[in-house]
Image (cartoon, rainbow, N blue to C red; front, side):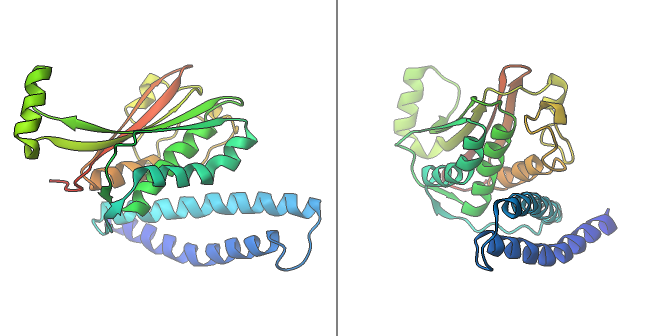
Length: 256
């Protein structure tokens, strides 16, 4: 296992540098920085860029998995606005959603306080969930992203819980919860319990793109990242009715 981990680490690092150069070169050409390109050239360059982006994502996920499993992943937490983070993700994925005529709806509780977390990692988690939802949603479908604050406290009647919250606020846990819901094809029951496993992937026939989006590492990275913050991630799905992926993070940012 050590040898495998070391190989993944070295291979990921060695592939990243030339891959980044290729990606940057394609970006420059597509932006017209090297001269005008015709429509036919743009079509093939765009195809190359999409696949290069996918390869970059795969390599980054492989490196992230190694970092997380070896305990080398460092979090850089700070105060972050979860609504702002979700808004940025929606802006990023809107072109992909528009291509498929998939509507993106954002429902955010305005009372959510700032959350203490690693913005880059949480942005990656939300981006992964939203991107997957769009990919597995049919044309003219819908993806809804919600965020709200929740409290957990000892089991008791509502009135007693309210009094407990007021009297012992430090003993009540506050979380921010984010859910991403689609009306796509759903996930078979036998796969739901293993959806966050490494290299576990929903059959390509369920994807409206007709191909696989990767090696099944993205959701495993999401699980590691959320749990590293002391949070929890889950999936609820029914074949033919769509899926909901959600996660919650402690607002204090204290995993203990």
